[in-house]
Length: 289
Ligand code: GUN
Figure 1 (cartoon, protein in one colour):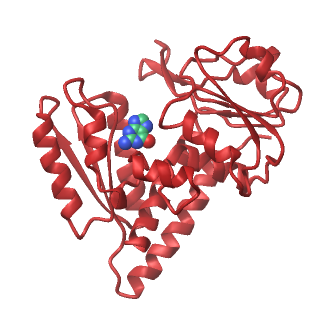
Figure 2: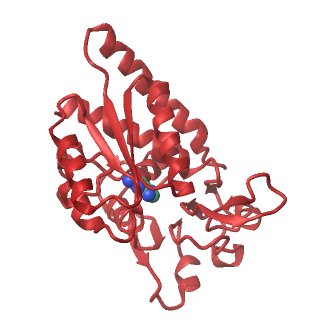
Protein backbone atom coordinates (compact mmCIF):
# COMPACT_ATOMS: atom_id res chain seq x y z
CA UNK A 1 0.00 0.00 0.00
CA UNK A 2 1.19 3.47 -0.88
CA UNK A 3 1.50 5.91 2.03
CA UNK A 4 0.11 8.94 0.22
CA UNK A 5 1.82 11.99 1.73
CA UNK A 6 0.19 14.37 -0.71
CA UNK A 7 -3.32 13.27 0.28
CA UNK A 8 -2.52 13.10 4.01
CA UNK A 9 -0.85 16.51 4.00
CA UNK A 10 -3.91 17.96 2.26
CA UNK A 11 -6.12 16.48 4.99
CA UNK A 12 -3.92 18.05 7.68
CA UNK A 13 -3.97 21.39 5.86
CA UNK A 14 -7.78 21.26 5.70
CA UNK A 15 -7.90 20.61 9.47
CA UNK A 16 -5.58 23.59 10.08
CA UNK A 17 -7.59 25.78 7.71
CA UNK A 18 -10.77 25.08 9.71
CA UNK A 19 -9.01 25.91 13.01
CA UNK A 20 -7.68 29.18 11.56
CA UNK A 21 -11.09 30.17 10.18
CA UNK A 22 -12.59 29.62 13.62
CA UNK A 23 -9.83 31.71 15.24
CA UNK A 24 -10.51 34.53 12.81
CA UNK A 25 -14.29 34.33 13.35
CA UNK A 26 -13.64 34.86 17.07
CA UNK A 27 -11.68 38.00 16.20
CA UNK A 28 -8.30 36.45 16.89
CA UNK A 29 -5.19 37.08 14.85
CA UNK A 30 -4.21 34.11 12.62
CA UNK A 31 -0.86 32.34 13.11
CA UNK A 32 2.06 34.13 11.45
CA UNK A 33 5.12 32.31 10.05
CA UNK A 34 8.23 33.97 8.66
CA UNK A 35 10.91 32.32 6.55
CA UNK A 36 14.44 33.68 6.19
CA UNK A 37 16.17 32.77 2.92
CA UNK A 38 19.79 33.76 2.43
CA UNK A 39 21.03 33.68 -1.19
CA UNK A 40 19.57 32.11 -4.34
CA UNK A 41 19.96 28.31 -4.00
CA UNK A 42 17.44 26.75 -6.41
CA UNK A 43 16.20 23.95 -4.16
CA UNK A 44 15.89 26.27 -1.14
CA UNK A 45 13.90 28.79 -3.22
CA UNK A 46 11.50 26.01 -4.24
CA UNK A 47 11.03 24.78 -0.66
CA UNK A 48 10.56 28.24 0.84
CA UNK A 49 8.16 29.25 -1.94
CA UNK A 50 6.10 26.17 -1.23
CA UNK A 51 6.06 26.89 2.52
CA UNK A 52 4.83 30.46 1.95
CA UNK A 53 2.10 29.33 -0.49
CA UNK A 54 0.90 26.73 2.02
CA UNK A 55 0.65 29.44 4.70
CA UNK A 56 -1.58 31.49 2.45
CA UNK A 57 -3.72 28.43 1.65
CA UNK A 58 -4.54 27.70 5.31
CA UNK A 59 -5.09 31.37 6.15
CA UNK A 60 -1.85 32.09 8.04
CA UNK A 61 -0.01 35.36 7.72
CA UNK A 62 3.41 34.80 6.19
CA UNK A 63 6.52 36.87 5.64
CA UNK A 64 9.40 35.95 3.36
CA UNK A 65 12.66 37.64 4.26
CA UNK A 66 15.18 37.39 1.44
CA UNK A 67 18.76 38.37 2.20
CA UNK A 68 21.85 38.64 -0.03
CA UNK A 69 24.23 35.68 0.02
CA UNK A 70 27.08 37.99 1.11
CA UNK A 71 25.27 39.21 4.26
CA UNK A 72 27.55 39.19 7.32
CA UNK A 73 26.90 36.89 10.26
CA UNK A 74 26.36 39.94 12.49
CA UNK A 75 23.74 41.41 10.16
CA UNK A 76 21.91 38.09 9.99
CA UNK A 77 21.99 37.86 13.81
CA UNK A 78 20.49 41.36 13.89
CA UNK A 79 17.57 40.15 11.74
CA UNK A 80 17.13 37.14 14.06
CA UNK A 81 16.93 39.38 17.13
CA UNK A 82 14.28 41.47 15.37
CA UNK A 83 12.20 38.35 14.66
CA UNK A 84 12.57 37.15 18.26
CA UNK A 85 11.17 40.47 19.50
CA UNK A 86 8.33 40.78 16.98
CA UNK A 87 5.13 40.14 18.96
CA UNK A 88 3.11 39.72 15.77
CA UNK A 89 5.18 36.70 14.74
CA UNK A 90 4.52 33.23 16.18
CA UNK A 91 7.31 31.29 14.55
CA UNK A 92 10.02 31.45 11.93
CA UNK A 93 12.53 29.31 10.12
CA UNK A 94 15.97 30.04 8.73
CA UNK A 95 16.24 27.94 5.58
CA UNK A 96 19.34 25.73 5.53
CA UNK A 97 21.98 25.40 4.20
CA UNK A 98 23.43 28.85 4.91
CA UNK A 99 26.40 30.28 2.95
CA UNK A 100 29.76 28.87 4.09
CA UNK A 101 30.96 32.09 5.78
CA UNK A 102 28.06 31.94 8.25
CA UNK A 103 28.21 29.66 11.30
CA UNK A 104 24.96 27.71 11.15
CA UNK A 105 25.15 26.63 14.79
CA UNK A 106 25.50 30.23 15.97
CA UNK A 107 22.42 31.25 13.99
CA UNK A 108 20.27 28.32 15.18
CA UNK A 109 21.26 29.05 18.80
CA UNK A 110 20.11 32.66 18.40
CA UNK A 111 16.55 31.63 17.49
CA UNK A 112 14.13 31.96 20.42
CA UNK A 113 13.16 28.33 21.20
CA UNK A 114 9.54 29.50 21.59
CA UNK A 115 9.54 30.57 17.92
CA UNK A 116 11.71 27.70 16.65
CA UNK A 117 9.02 25.92 14.59
CA UNK A 118 11.74 23.87 12.80
CA UNK A 119 12.64 22.36 16.20
CA UNK A 120 16.38 22.70 15.48
CA UNK A 121 17.33 24.60 18.68
CA UNK A 122 19.04 22.39 21.31
CA UNK A 123 16.33 23.36 23.82
CA UNK A 124 13.64 21.87 21.57
CA UNK A 125 15.75 18.86 20.61
CA UNK A 126 16.46 18.14 24.28
CA UNK A 127 12.82 18.59 25.28
CA UNK A 128 11.69 16.29 22.46
CA UNK A 129 14.20 13.65 23.58
CA UNK A 130 12.89 13.86 27.16
CA UNK A 131 9.28 13.62 25.92
CA UNK A 132 8.45 17.15 27.09
CA UNK A 133 6.29 19.60 25.13
CA UNK A 134 8.47 20.70 22.19
CA UNK A 135 8.56 21.61 18.54
CA UNK A 136 9.43 18.39 16.71
CA UNK A 137 11.39 18.83 13.45
CA UNK A 138 8.88 18.79 10.59
CA UNK A 139 10.20 15.84 8.57
CA UNK A 140 10.33 13.32 11.44
CA UNK A 141 7.02 14.72 12.75
CA UNK A 142 5.52 14.14 9.29
CA UNK A 143 6.76 10.53 9.16
CA UNK A 144 5.19 9.83 12.58
CA UNK A 145 1.87 11.33 11.41
CA UNK A 146 1.88 9.28 8.22
CA UNK A 147 2.49 6.04 10.16
CA UNK A 148 -0.23 6.99 12.65
CA UNK A 149 -2.89 8.00 10.11
CA UNK A 150 -2.37 4.80 8.09
CA UNK A 151 -2.38 2.68 11.30
CA UNK A 152 0.99 1.17 10.39
CA UNK A 153 1.95 -1.21 13.24
CA UNK A 154 5.17 -0.10 14.97
CA UNK A 155 4.96 -1.51 18.51
CA UNK A 156 7.74 -4.06 19.09
CA UNK A 157 8.86 -3.84 15.45
CA UNK A 158 12.50 -3.59 14.42
CA UNK A 159 13.05 -0.21 12.77
CA UNK A 160 16.30 0.47 10.91
CA UNK A 161 17.01 4.16 10.28
CA UNK A 162 19.70 4.79 7.66
CA UNK A 163 21.35 8.20 8.11
CA UNK A 164 22.12 10.20 11.28
CA UNK A 165 21.52 13.83 10.25
CA UNK A 166 20.35 16.23 12.95
CA UNK A 167 17.27 17.10 10.86
CA UNK A 168 15.97 13.61 10.06
CA UNK A 169 17.88 10.43 10.96
CA UNK A 170 18.78 11.23 14.57
CA UNK A 171 15.39 12.67 15.62
CA UNK A 172 13.31 9.95 13.89
CA UNK A 173 15.43 7.27 15.58
CA UNK A 174 14.52 8.84 18.94
CA UNK A 175 10.81 9.26 18.14
CA UNK A 176 10.37 5.70 16.85
CA UNK A 177 11.72 4.32 20.12
CA UNK A 178 9.54 6.51 22.35
CA UNK A 179 6.23 5.59 23.89
CA UNK A 180 3.35 6.61 21.66
CA UNK A 181 0.98 5.55 18.93
CA UNK A 182 3.55 5.26 16.15
CA UNK A 183 6.48 4.55 18.47
CA UNK A 184 7.50 1.67 20.74
CA UNK A 185 9.79 0.25 18.06
CA UNK A 186 13.22 -1.27 18.63
CA UNK A 187 15.50 1.04 16.69
CA UNK A 188 18.85 0.56 14.97
CA UNK A 189 20.51 3.74 13.66
CA UNK A 190 22.81 2.92 10.73
CA UNK A 191 25.32 5.32 9.17
CA UNK A 192 28.42 5.51 6.98
CA UNK A 193 30.49 3.36 9.38
CA UNK A 194 27.86 0.64 9.76
CA UNK A 195 29.15 -2.78 8.70
CA UNK A 196 27.04 -5.12 6.54
CA UNK A 197 24.08 -2.76 6.22
CA UNK A 198 22.10 -5.27 4.11
CA UNK A 199 22.21 -7.79 6.99
CA UNK A 200 20.46 -5.18 9.13
CA UNK A 201 17.93 -3.97 6.56
CA UNK A 202 16.98 -7.58 5.73
CA UNK A 203 15.91 -8.11 9.36
CA UNK A 204 14.00 -4.80 9.53
CA UNK A 205 10.20 -4.55 9.79
CA UNK A 206 10.45 -0.80 9.09
CA UNK A 207 13.22 0.93 7.12
CA UNK A 208 13.58 4.71 7.13
CA UNK A 209 15.99 5.87 4.42
CA UNK A 210 17.48 9.32 5.07
CA UNK A 211 20.75 9.06 3.21
CA UNK A 212 20.53 11.25 0.10
CA UNK A 213 21.81 8.53 -2.25
CA UNK A 214 19.42 8.01 -5.18
CA UNK A 215 17.86 4.50 -5.45
CA UNK A 216 20.29 3.07 -2.87
CA UNK A 217 17.84 0.59 -1.29
CA UNK A 218 17.20 -2.40 -3.58
CA UNK A 219 14.61 -5.19 -3.31
CA UNK A 220 17.23 -7.77 -2.29
CA UNK A 221 18.06 -5.65 0.79
CA UNK A 222 14.60 -5.92 2.39
CA UNK A 223 12.38 -8.68 3.70
CA UNK A 224 8.94 -9.45 2.29
CA UNK A 225 6.30 -7.14 3.80
CA UNK A 226 8.67 -4.50 5.18
CA UNK A 227 7.46 -0.90 5.68
CA UNK A 228 9.59 1.52 3.62
CA UNK A 229 9.85 5.25 4.35
CA UNK A 230 11.88 7.21 1.79
CA UNK A 231 13.15 10.62 2.91
CA UNK A 232 15.59 11.07 -0.03
CA UNK A 233 15.10 14.01 -2.40
CA UNK A 234 18.10 14.23 -4.72
CA UNK A 235 18.03 16.20 -7.97
CA UNK A 236 19.36 13.92 -10.71
CA UNK A 237 20.21 15.36 -14.13
CA UNK A 238 17.63 14.39 -16.77
CA UNK A 239 17.75 16.15 -20.13
CA UNK A 240 14.37 14.69 -21.12
CA UNK A 241 12.74 16.75 -18.38
CA UNK A 242 11.88 20.42 -18.92
CA UNK A 243 13.57 21.37 -15.65
CA UNK A 244 16.73 19.47 -16.64
CA UNK A 245 16.48 17.25 -13.56
CA UNK A 246 14.17 14.81 -11.81
CA UNK A 247 13.80 14.14 -8.08
CA UNK A 248 14.90 10.70 -6.91
CA UNK A 249 14.46 9.09 -3.50
CA UNK A 250 16.83 6.76 -1.65
CA UNK A 251 14.74 3.73 -2.66
CA UNK A 252 14.54 1.81 -5.97
CA UNK A 253 10.78 2.25 -5.94
CA UNK A 254 9.87 -0.03 -8.88
CA UNK A 255 11.39 -3.18 -7.40
CA UNK A 256 11.07 -2.39 -3.67
CA UNK A 257 7.35 -1.50 -3.86
CA UNK A 258 6.59 -5.07 -5.07
CA UNK A 259 7.94 -6.51 -1.79
CA UNK A 260 6.90 -3.80 0.70
CA UNK A 261 3.67 -3.79 2.73
CA UNK A 262 3.64 0.03 2.95
CA UNK A 263 5.87 2.45 1.03
CA UNK A 264 6.18 6.22 0.55
CA UNK A 265 6.67 7.44 -3.04
CA UNK A 266 9.05 10.24 -4.10
CA UNK A 267 7.70 12.76 -4.85
CA UNK A 268 4.38 12.75 -2.97
CA UNK A 269 5.44 10.92 0.20
CA UNK A 270 7.41 12.46 3.05
CA UNK A 271 8.03 15.82 1.27
CA UNK A 272 4.48 17.22 1.42
CA UNK A 273 4.14 15.99 5.01
CA UNK A 274 7.11 18.16 6.03
CA UNK A 275 5.30 21.32 4.96
CA UNK A 276 2.04 20.29 6.65
CA UNK A 277 3.88 19.70 9.93
CA UNK A 278 5.66 23.06 9.72
CA UNK A 279 2.18 24.61 9.55
CA UNK A 280 1.10 22.43 12.47
CA UNK A 281 4.09 23.64 14.53
CA UNK A 282 3.24 27.26 13.70
CA UNK A 283 -0.33 26.70 14.88
CA UNK A 284 1.05 25.15 18.09
CA UNK A 285 3.33 28.19 18.53
CA UNK A 286 0.29 30.45 18.26
CA UNK A 287 -1.52 28.35 20.87
CA UNK A 288 1.43 27.94 23.27
CA UNK A 289 2.78 31.51 23.36
N1 GUN B 1 16.75 22.59 4.66
C1 GUN B 1 16.35 21.34 4.35
N2 GUN B 1 15.31 20.98 5.12
C2 GUN B 1 15.04 22.02 5.93
C3 GUN B 1 14.07 22.25 6.93
O1 GUN B 1 13.23 21.42 7.28
N3 GUN B 1 14.11 23.47 7.53
C4 GUN B 1 15.02 24.41 7.19
N4 GUN B 1 15.00 25.58 7.83
N5 GUN B 1 15.94 24.23 6.27
C5 GUN B 1 15.94 23.04 5.63
